[in-house]
Length: 146
Ligand SMILES: [Zn+2]
Image 1 (cartoon, rainbow, N blue to C red):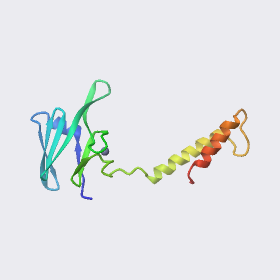
Image 2: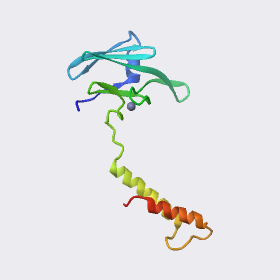
Image 3: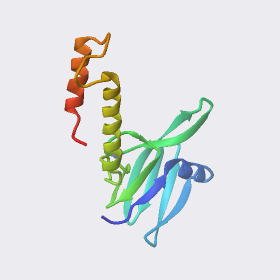
Image 4: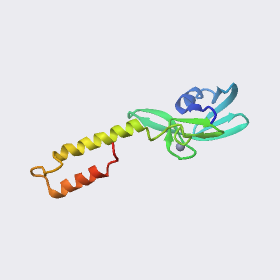
């Protein structure tokens, strides 16, 4: 995969507010980003890419410009240009969901929470319903090994 060029949508919209044109440089090549009220057009390396622009309200009275990924249609603050495609980082495969360290931590936290509620593995906690205990034991058994 070639290097990815990241387009910060809000920054480009702000920069392009005056005359609607922003020059970009990537891999020693120049490109142009044209900003229109509801559309961003990127012209780079002989290709034209278009993305919609939307205003998104943040903190009530403030707003920023966002776009939608052309692949997954989700609202994004930035898009990446990689392998002649303009998509979000997730669709470009630049974000990895299964970070093993994080996942193991999450499972361990879940295990501790269940064990805490069970109090003891071999006898029922006072006032705890049999059905609740069964549900917790099943949830514990369903967790992947540490
Ligand atoms: Zn996407």
